[in-house]
Image 1 (tube, helix red, strand yellow):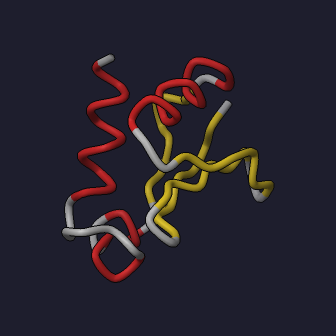
Image 2 (image 1 turned 90 degrees about the vertical axis):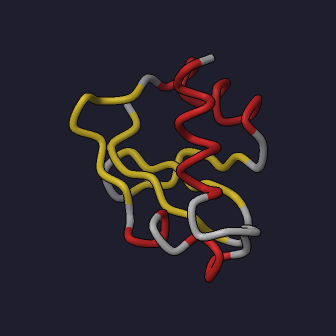
Length: 73
């Protein structure tokens, strides 16, 4: 299960505990990561997700937009 997500270099980085289990740069890749690994109801998001423009995304909300779009897919 995915327990933590961060924004890094224009991608999302997924963790299980303290271990990185993958990254995604698109909505399609994000949806595939969630489908493959599952996501806990209490999954935490790094503060980098709130300031994604400082982590390689075009806008401050682009990382969350990508995640939420993938969750709706």
